[in-house]
Image (cartoon, rainbow, N blue to C red; front, side):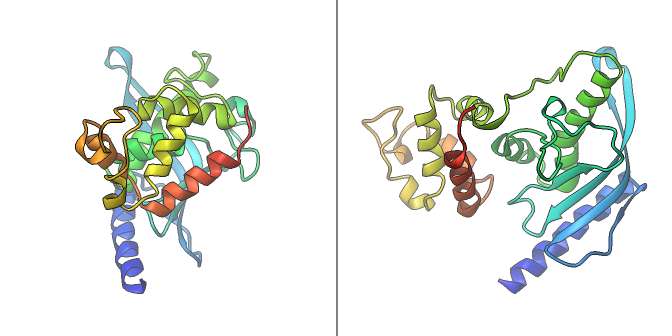
Length: 229
């Protein structure tokens, strides 16, 4: 376990090095514990509609867990620019930025499992949406979810391609099983076959690749503990 953690931290610091080359105004904080903390001015520039360039910067703290990318970083805006309320999707408890549903973020991250990949696919779209709204633009043009369980269910129904909460719970439960056992479960969408022999096997394998069973157990427990809305 210790050797695996050491190897993962080595990979994380490699990703941090790549990130700092692109964002030299950020720095690693000297902290102890199970996270790598980055803090400073995060500047970004993206091409938007009609190939126009949009740029801005935010003062951020990024906390990277030592099991990244099996778990997601937490991001905090530390200069008071983003109001701490639901209208800007800032979690009222720890004041971390709510960039999207955990499973959606993991799905986006799977396209480039690195710190720069997380920043480009998960963080920058959120910051761009906030910045354009603060400049008088439309509200979260990339879309936004309702708060709490209702928003998670809506997003997970789309990700899993199911019609109701029961389908979401079934998929999340399936993803807590070992792969060999998961493949033997009867598919709820084509009940005459086990999922390892039906057209949904590819979907199962994709979601299994996003993280480990412990992460999915946490997501299932979190969802089941929430109340609507």
